[in-house]
Length: 481
Image 1 (cartoon, rainbow, N blue to C red):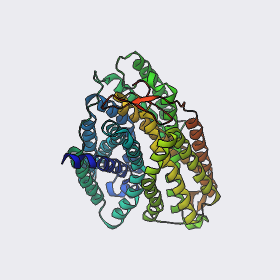
Image 2: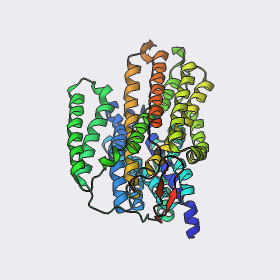
Image 3: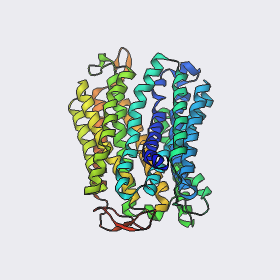
Image 4: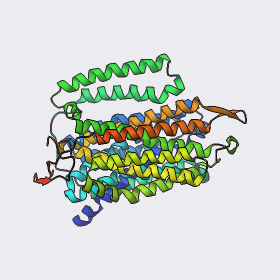
C-alpha cells in the first residue's frame, strides 16, 4: 500500500494542479450570460474573475510560507478544501455577492502548484525531480486548455449550476486523493509566522492588481485608479522595509535580490505576460464575426477546441523539457522556451485568418510555455534553501499572475484604441490584434534575454532528505542551503 501511494504521488499532485487551472477558467464561458442569470450588472459579474485573481495573488506567497513552516501537505489540503468549498457555494446559489466570495475562495487553489513542487523536491530522488516538476508546471496550461471547452459544453447543454456541481465532485476526489497519497514533508523552517508582512503584502498586491484589472473600466486617469497605484507604492515600500528588519520575514528579500533568484522572478513575470497574450487574443479573434473580414465567428466551444491541441502538447512535451534541463540546464530551457513563444507570435502575425494557422501558432506558443514554465521552478529550487522552496515558488507564481494581469490590461488598451464599426457595434480590427501579438512576442524576447542573463556555475547541491552532496547538472546549483 505504501508503494502504491508513493507511485501515485506525482499523478495526484498533477491532478490537483489541473483542477486549479480548471477552476480558474470554468467561469469564462458564463460571463456573457451571468448578468441575466444572477440579475446583477456586468460590472458586478466581472468581480467573479477579479476576486479569484486577487485572492490567488495574495494567498499564493502566504500559503507557500505557511507550508514551509507548518507542513506543505497540511496547507495543500487546506488550499484544495477552500477551492472545493468555493465550488460548492457556486453550485448552491445565484446571489452575486455569495458567488464573488466563493470565487475568492477558489483563488486559494493558486497555491497548489508551488506547494506541490516543493513536496516533490522533498520526497523524490534528484533523478526524478526534474520530470515531475516539469509535469507539475505544465498542469497550468493543461487545465486551462481542458477547462474552457468542457465548461462551454456544460453551459451550452445544461444548467450552469451543473458545471459547479461537477467541479465540486472533482474537488472532493482531488482532496481525498491528496489526503491518501501525499505524505507530510519532513522539511520545515520553524519560527513565528510574519503576520504583519502577510497583511502588508496582501494590501499592496490588492491595490496593484485591482488598479491593473479595473483600469480600463474605471479609467486609467480616474482618482480611484491613481489612488490605488499611490496606495500600492506606499504600502509596498513600508512592507519592503518591514521585511528587511524582520528576523523571519514572509519573503526573504535578501535572498530574492540575488541574481539567481531575482532574474527567474523577472523572467516569470515576462513569461506570464507573453503566455497569456496567446490564449487571450486567440479566444477573441476566432469569435469575431465574419463581417469583420478576418473573424471566424466560432462559438465558445469551438474556441476552446482551438486551444485544446496546445494543452495536449504541453502534457506530451513536459518530459522533453525536463530532459533538456537535465542535460543543458534549466537556464537554457527557459531561454529556448521564451524564444519558441516569440516564434509562435511570428506565425500569428504572418497569418491570423486561416484556422489551421491560428491553431499552429497557438500550439507553438504553448510548446514554448511548456519549456519556460517547467524551467522556472527548477531554477528556483536550485537557488534557495530547502526550507524556503514553497514560499519562493509561491513568489514566482505570483510574478506570473502579475504578468498575466498586466497583459490583460495592455491587450485591452490596444484593442480599445483599434476598433471599427461592424453592424453598428465597435469591434477590434485585425491591426489591433496584430499589434497585441507584436507586443507579446517582444516581451517574450525580453524574457529570453533575462533567462540568458541568469548566472551559471557548477556547484553542488544538497538533497533535502539525506543532506548528501550531489553534483548539480551543469547549471544552477543550490545556493545558500
